[in-house]
Image 1 (tube, rainbow, N blue to C red):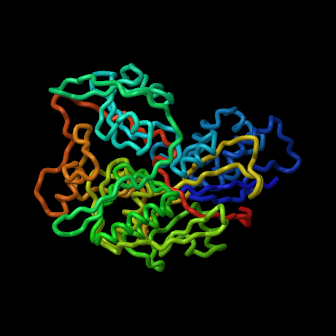
Image 2 (cartoon, one colour):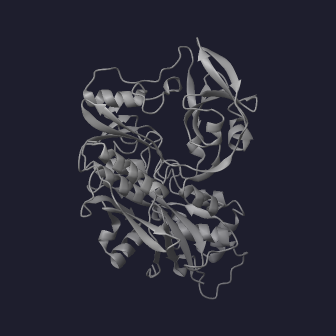
Image 3 (cartoon, rainbow, N blue to C red):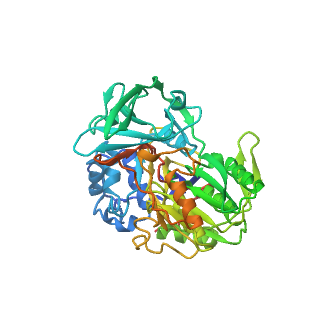
Length: 507
């Protein structure tokens, strides 16, 4: 039976790819399998990766003819039983070195909520650090969502916390205390003369379903007589494209001539939103290429033959398009473009994917200045692969979905041509190094906040010392985790658009 898989391009929308029966390991004529048929989830994982995975041709087990017989093929799949994650991992290319980002989930509905910025949480972003020479952990809050339980409990950026529900956080228990618990209170702390001072307990917080608006903070600063927009933007969430555009209209109304774009916590999101943002910053000329995509050989050839080579290019745009489910019409909004070529981007190791795409995509047109730390170094995109029998019919027997890497993204010059090239593999390098630390988390927009201050100093040419972590003497630590590390889409890209690839030629 011919199967098809609905593929949601995480680089936002639904891309549905028809998987041909020819892609399966077909038994020779008259050969009867001598082992039990694999379950449909195992087949779904194998066939999906064989079809769309960017590096499928580098994985021996995904090659046609690798298995001598159907019995060998079925035995391989059955050996994993219901350990579907293990099967998925076994079929990836150089896991942890080349492919650091493909993943699989057992519930695509939760994943779809993540696309819209919806999750169940207390509504605060934090980092956890371990004190050297101890198993103890403490956390510091980087920002709090308006209207969240965390805001209701009085938490704010810069707060330190040591305990959860009265228990000291350690390297062994922090996962259960913070990430497997929908109701808890925090014990706050401070550091005075190199000593931890235990503070008050917050009120009990109960996790709720929240939708995070990534347009977190905006302001207009007068820097050297030039109106300078400042935007803290935390995710490329397409549901808030119109709000993002309104922020740029406000900048235009206030005569903004340069922009400080704060992406220190932005791990990526919609590639279409990245196109919109680049157009808001620089230009709406839809004849200029913003980025290019490269799929595996099968899909690159198919797209070129069916839609033309230009289909692989992404252009700057004049309008935002949004489909309205209620009216079943497409609404358009004119892009509010600043038309500037003076951009300063605040970066960190958490800056990834669509964030890097905006920087890299604009570089051929003007010199983008980076202030902060090296970015992540992710220039590939994934898709959500669901198990579909046909375009309309989702397999009702399970909710498993894969998020394999399927394409590479470059700018109009083709960079990065080599994902392992210096200057790319370890992320985009800052023009001016600066960092923040738990000791100096001032409010966003405060001109003494270390990363904003470093950016302003860089703009005006001040010879101030680089901003460095203001560590308390005698206290050393290592970063254990960020709250964003546990979100499904923390470092992803997804592409808007819905199309059905159904005419692939047999290989």
